Image (cartoon, rainbow, N blue to C red):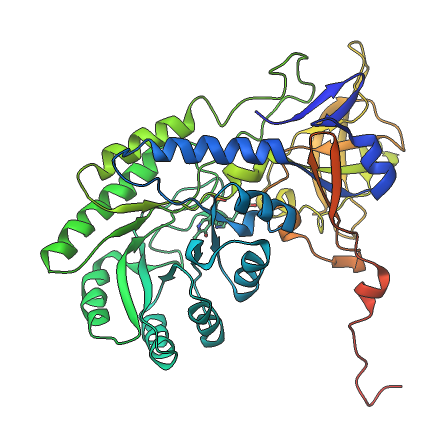
Length: 439
Ligand code: LLP
């Protein structure tokens, strides 16, 4: 469930009226719910802690790429989360948000020497190595800095899954990880390298996966690999199982009123089913597990609040032009993703419905949030919420069409704070430089 619900005729984020946020911060604006973030983090962390109660609870490395807002990060750091980063910028932001280096993992397909040096010098927990070249580079960097950096190999298990081809990462055609058959040779090579210490394996097969089957098949391969590596005398202590668990995007436009009105959980028992499957797949393996969920933690903890600008009735359809665009929320344009749209003013039970193509102001037809979406009739000035926009929303935003980078607000109970103000035109335009040959 999440904490966006109608109260006294308007949509609230926890105890805050979204109309108040729109009035104070303007639109478009992302709004996040602390209670929802905390709830999902705890649900996941507790389920994973139950997998093997004889061990320390496994670290949950929240995948910052899903939502790197400082308020969101500080909320998760305070809850005891770790963080999965993919660039020097993300490592810097993790440190800024208060994650101790011992709870930071660095993944990514193409890490540069400067990034590796930054990570090693910062003393982070683990680097997930994806190529042989990266292994050598990391060892050189570690030796230069007088460190043996703890690392794991990210394995490509050749089992991909995900809500869209662009977010599948685990199949052999995908660019991610070292191939399954190479791990033994690389592990043996790494044993002779001075600047790196291999601790185990990692994988991540894709995103928005709403069944346990693909994970189970991939984890079985990893269990086999752990046994094979140990048979060759290698030390395998850690198994980082990645992220990828999906969430329901298909919430009804008008939730029923009531205490549990705020929509379904992550599918019936998906987290529990996943935990039970992980327990089976890793039973007796004697490894320290780790996880990298992103979307599951923040996905339905956020909405994009926007305002209707114009109606454009045409012979065959009606366009609803809103002030948010694909630069603010690119998922529909990029992955044909579905986001439910809830009017902020609660529609009357007998409200007239209309079918809209919901579009933004950007100059391309791809700037479309929904096609033929049936909504209560809306007029210019109406506020709407794109639901389930907390993951890969603001973190993928851009300034395309010279639009200001979208602001972000964090709600906690009855309070809200602007955790990223709307960019100013000075900030947007002020960093460009004219070449010296032009006046
Ligand atoms: N770990 C690694 C190594 C990853 O590459 C990712 C996501 C995650 C963890 C977290 O995955 P999650 O639990 O959030 O599924 N922009 C796309 C999603 C891209 C996911 C990229 N990797 C979208 O909007 O659907």
